[in-house]
Length: 334
Image 1: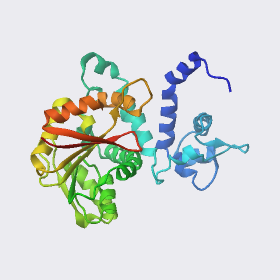
Image 2: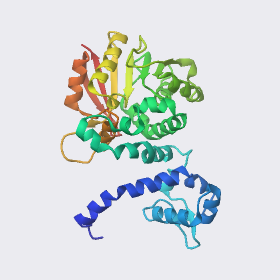
Image 3: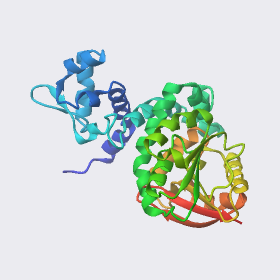
Image 4: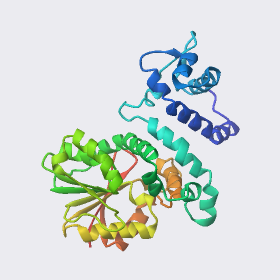
């Protein structure tokens, strides 16, 4: 196959949002779920989703051209491996992520010029308040966000557990741990461990069901609060996955210093993030960094993390890579 011209390559990149929004629309209407029991025509799917048959056919035809769904000679659409990941209940489902990306992220990214000119987050400009405050006031969006994070982090959690040995700890505190997807897996793997799940009160309320379903509720304390004020005392390890990248420098220092005050003298800080490598090579974290810029956060290089740890009173002792594009930055109190 002949290589694409640079003109064609750039055109595909510019038009990338066409596919993003088409996937988002299919995810919103649950098309993949409706094909679980076999192929259907666009008319059948339209009746089930209260959409127009011709419009839905055009959407599915476009998605089939990039491998999401497939149209047979009979005019029926069927699943493909890519489409299966848009089902709600498959491991690593991307449905909620597609909806969140096509909604909150897409709308905020349209105002990236504001970030570049002012250094301020674009999300606040578009939605009138910071992301986590907005989610707290919109339970439907928060539920989609939770499901998106579970879908994204499932593969990451396995990679973290493969790369890092938590068995040396007695108590692990998951700071900003959401609905507990990572902590539940850590506790399931290490039966002697106890855990503390700490997040905003309305988030922790949503975590109760997941922690019980994982069978670890008797070993997990659920604590509500803001890590900008304080974090629970006495854990051996304080894990923060995709937390530090959400915040500006001063907020990050506040969070880390609160962990410093709360942890035991020989405790460990475990910051789990993408670490931006040098060079021009592709790396997911480089574009994730732009999304973080929309809410006032950032991804960081090793040198930037080392400096951040130092300012917060920690020594960065080692960086443990994982099979996912993130690393575990281990720190101890200085």
